[in-house]
Length: 128
Image 1 (cartoon, rainbow, N blue to C red):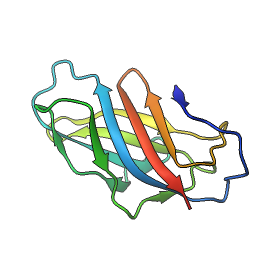
Image 2 (cartoon, helix red, strand yellow):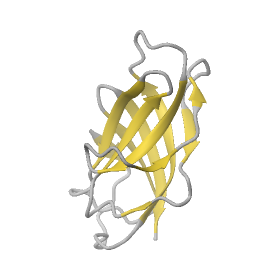
Image 3 (cartoon, rainbow, N blue to C red):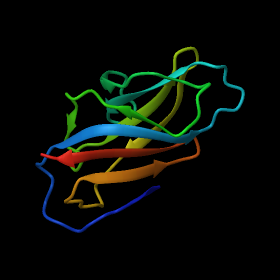
């Protein structure tokens, strides 16, 4: 489910989105050991090759936490889909959310919340 501030605007199919941060609001952590968490951004839904990986955050600290995305990640959000995967350093993949913008047109810097049964995250960035 995608929520957030959405505006109808000009065609963004050929614009590049610069993802700046991912904020982990909550995740399904039942029976998981204490570990370090990070995000991996991949192109497509089932891809394994990361486009970017964030720094880690220990689960013993409270949420929410905002992690910076390496500055080299730029994406064509309107013409391709991306997955943001939550990883634990001892458990591996904990959950993932798909960013699929086909039905939205956003013209300003965005902060968008993405939620599913595994996790709730917010992404922020700007258009170039």
